Image 1 (cartoon, rainbow over the protein chains, first blue to last red):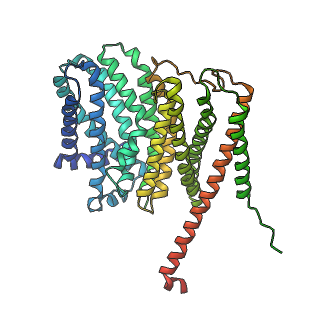
Image 2 (image 1 turned 30 degrees about the vertical axis):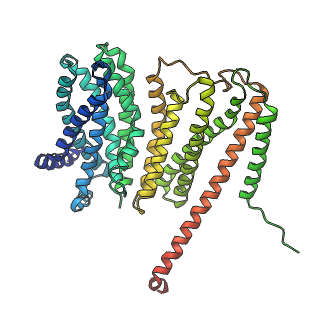
Image 3 (image 1 turned 135 degrees about the vertical axis):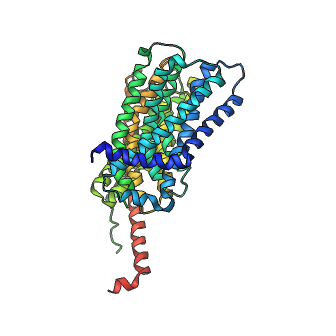
Length: 224
Length: 236
């Protein structure tokens, strides 16, 4: 069995479990929606949506993302399912990639469905900006999930569990958040792609560094 | 006749710290000239910059010893990482406290989202997270978790710095008077700074040595306790 096939098997397991419960996806989606609604009350009604959307969007996505990441490993903890996963005759790094890919899929899907609703709420037409926006969202989400998956595997073994994940994750993903917000802001201002290349480079650098680092260190986290 | 007191290397470092710190204080208040524009408040700089240097050094030590722990699996590296993270957070807090005291009269604000300030704040948050992770993980996993986090947090520092710098490109570069390179330091000021840097570094080493020996004692007590709890196995 090839490397990617093994990874896909683990992801497929998560997709199947998720398909039966729809727990992670729905909680992330509804939560993102709630954040936007609450955010709306916190803002001045006359505020320019182009100024506020990037911030609101990424607050909603990151907080919803933490929720989803937490679920991803707490589900494994129930009935000691994670023990079974560790018994798979594969490298620990593959388990990491599989779990990571699963969370990435769920979070991207939630974002994909939340985005049109944000468009309606903020009265912005983003359809023609979708390719650029999609690229930024994908790169940022990948960076967020790559570290998040690793930290989530740690935080389920702490006393404070759900609280521990954001406490560890948010400071580390600061570059992703800044890059995502800034790039989204430039895109909404209809600026050419060349203006955000430095941000895209930053996001790519973050993704590569932390995917590799998490892949390599995951085995130390799950080791019994 | 009383036996001669024996000094351990730690005691010697302690005394060296005391002496250089006293010398540093003398230089700060008696020797270094008052900065022309900023006045007396600028003297806080001689504690501010060494604190920053010490905290960065401490966090660097955390990363290196975390890496060595995962590689070698020797308890001593874990102890060093823990001690260094704790001390680093203390010095980082000092930076964040002395900074606003200095900034308020000089820049007229307590805080500005300048890249250096922001990076320091993020660093502080990361290593407070590190200590929280330490205190709330299941004991068998603590060392591995914190080692992994220590390495990742360190990898993140350049990215945080870069992103906060790009984020605020419009922001005028704050004039940090008296910092080497940016505004030329009077030779008396430079000497004072060097003595203070030395004093803080020695202080760091002293605190590290004390903290590590404390952790060692804790381990020993733990071992003794376990021996008490399982007397049967011991007699085998």
